[in-house]
Image 1 (cartoon, one colour):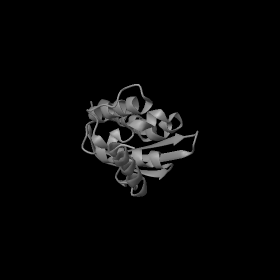
Image 2 (cartoon, one colour; image 1 turned 90 degrees about the horizontal axis):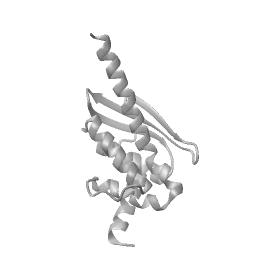
Image 3 (cartoon, rainbow, N blue to C red; image 1 turned 180 degrees about the horizontal axis):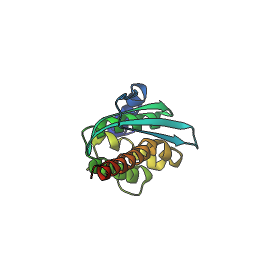
Image 4 (cartoon, one colour; image 1 turned 120 degrees about the vertical axis):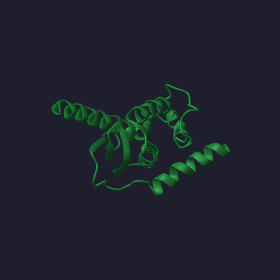
Length: 153
């Protein structure tokens, strides 16, 4: 195992043992549930949006180490990001995790820890569950914002 692989493995284990943002967000503007029926991983993602920016993010749920660590890293990284920036991260992460895209040097370092998941097809869905849920949550928030703007006119 290379030094980088060992560091990445430790990052995943650390985020699994001590997940960041593992809590209900009482003032969330969006709440979205994600389920992986193949293995039983499930989570609820909470976002607090201020216009187009993710002000806070958290999650609750249960799942394997990869699923939990992925959600922990994701919620840490999307805070402060715009919807477009978060969507770009979703696409980059999914591409890397599924092996459709090479490990992207533009990805934040913690996300590269999941690059080996592409070699474990049974774990890809675990790693991307939180990211699919984020993608869905951002769609909900976007459509709700359009509805509110339309009713104010």
